[in-house]
Image 1 (cartoon, rainbow, N blue to C red):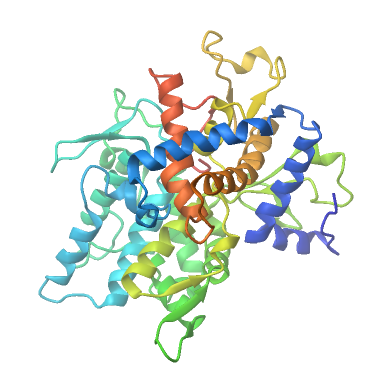
Image 2 (cartoon, one colour; image 1 turned 90 degrees about the vertical axis):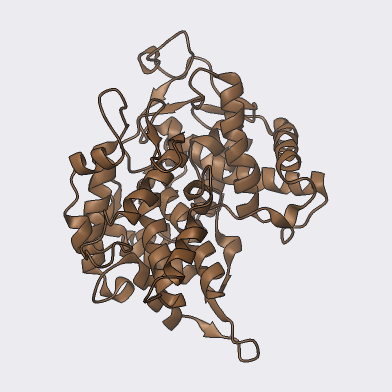
Length: 440
């Protein structure tokens, strides 16, 4: 293990907020797993082939051999759950008396997609959302997505009654937990996990938008990221296409959204780090302050994947450096690994008090628990490894089947499907997480 060394905690903190740091630090945890030196999990690499085969069957079932048709992982699919909603909304805008230009359409979609992702932390097993127009009922990520686009169309996040189709600082500042609960159909009979945390993220987003004019403009809204990215882009002289590096979008999100995360999160050198946590297994190898910390930045990653797609589709821009993006360390991708035997909790390693229902064998842990940190770190690296094995079994290159396509068509979906097979009553993950609405 050859840690990257820094001269100060401030430098380490800056590094831990970069994209490459996620894979590098998670790789340190994975290296310990290969030697059997994790505290909570045993690693079974011989099961990776079976996990990949399970995913391959799902890909073939849903896409046949038309692998090029697999969309990238992103919020778009959840917003379209049950029926198309995003493209019809775009067409509605284009047909309006004063149609927005292409850049404004992109701004509106960024507004929608970003706020929808922030609402996307696990809602629990009990909550559902019934769409008035279709009469369909949705749960989990799809329910949160369908609810968020309905709220967006109603102007829930806008302060401008003449333009409901935007998310702005003033509109977000007005939000309260009861208002969000009402819009998302939350009642005692239809409870949602993490409602307060979810609402706090949105109110804090208002403050973040106002504090970062560089990214969000003088009339602050998420969609103004388009103007920041355009200034950072390069235009191809022959084709006219704009090229923007993924690091520009990542930096805008990691810096611009920093104020939204709970103040209780890990800090280093006086800098709040967000979704970054100490890993006990790394502590014994740490030679300097911060070397035991592992960054995940799951919601930032989910936002990034979700914004790339509408920007490329609507504006025709091309993002470079997407290979730096990682798989998302959340309970569907991670659950796939546990349910298919790639990872197993060591017997007796968790106190019996952490099993609310001993008969189920499902522990419930807070996001800060060291077992969750190990699980998430292993998930990041295993998604790379299983993606490689999927490509090997299908005879495809990384260009022919990207990690974003694997996440969309195989691992996230596979994690949900194996959970339903193994736990048909709840469809929940093999390890339950106490969601506060700000992590998963």
